[in-house]
Length: 218
Image 1 (cartoon, rainbow, N blue to C red):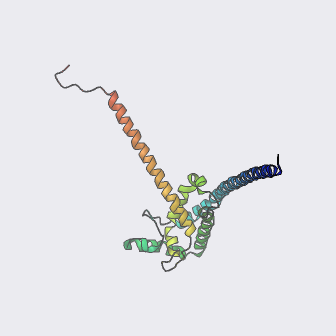
Image 2 (image 1 turned 90 degrees about the vertical axis):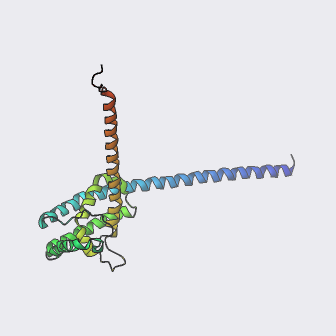
Image 3 (image 1 turned 90 degrees about the horizontal axis):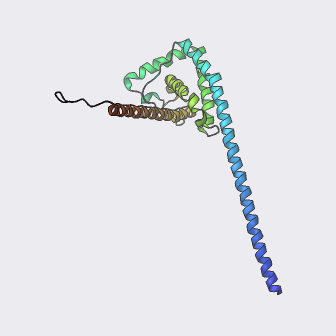
């Protein structure tokens, strides 16, 4: 074997070692990234559960307390979007403004209401920024969350002036919109399943019921 052959073999071996080294490094990097992704998802899930517990322990009791004190909020059944008075039909605007004005005249209640909405926003930001996984807790608190936001509609309109470029409570209302769409989709799916079940029941009943013979025939 000549010296040239030895050099060529050494170069080939070096290339093989380099390829193997790169492959091992890539596998290690892929594993590390995968581990980070799994850890992040686990942490997001843990934080979501923690915030859901906070919602149950802080928000619901405070909301219930205020609801009793003022004799009920002024909810809205209309389709909500920006949570500003300008989106309400003119004939109904004064009704909503009156409902918030009577709260402003009761400082103790109003201050507690501000505390409530600020706490809701501090929870919502975890979900809207992707720090906590909203999908994990949607089924447990999504419906109640949306109901509370709709009950507080007048308050949000009062604080969100049309002239402001950056409106307050955006995280609260963004999470509301996300979960409201999900609730509507769930409702549609339930209705669809009920219709399908009824359709199947009618078809089954039709196949089991003997045909009615015309009069005069056997």
